[in-house]
Image (cartoon, rainbow, N blue to C red; front, top):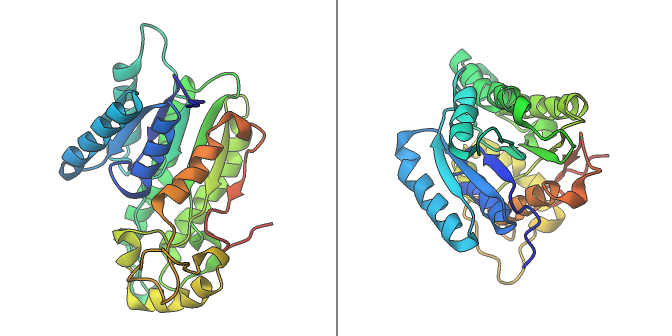
Length: 277
């Protein structure tokens, strides 16, 4: 079985569940050692379970490390903990960073609060920036590194209730382009922009949001359900959300050697809901 990421070290933020866990699984299957990052103590057991399963199944090293990406010291603390765990003498390199951790606090304009704005921008924008800042000294020097940022179709679609969340994802895409230039000697930097993905985060959206997005979903080529597709209660009849492994597959592709000539791009991982040019 091909293991093109054998010996590489990957940090996946927010990887105890959902898309993050699926990305960790994809990278582990390709041979990468993994940092399973999680935020709160309530996720510690789940993160340890993910790490144990990946280590056992794929014969790699997967270590859970708690760090709150949404705090000023969290990202640097994460890198410090990763270094102390994975360094071999004076040798330490971070090959892959997947900025997956994110939150959404959706509200119509009159209901948006300063706290919602600050919380969401800290986790979704400042966190990835501080993590890359802390990791930069340890990135490869031969362009073999990979950074993949999780954006969203919300950065460009203007969905109702997403003044704040959509803005954070547009910022992520802007940083992606800047980093692709500043880090060109170290790594490629790309983003992926999922639409609706299976799981509790999408299902928890308010009815006003779900109603507004329905037309988009019905016109998305790959969201038309086919025989054998599981039913998603939060999706319009006859449609389905993306599976976490489908998003993980795109991220995994961008982390491989074959993607060495792709940088500064937003790769549409949303079934055709958004077609950028």
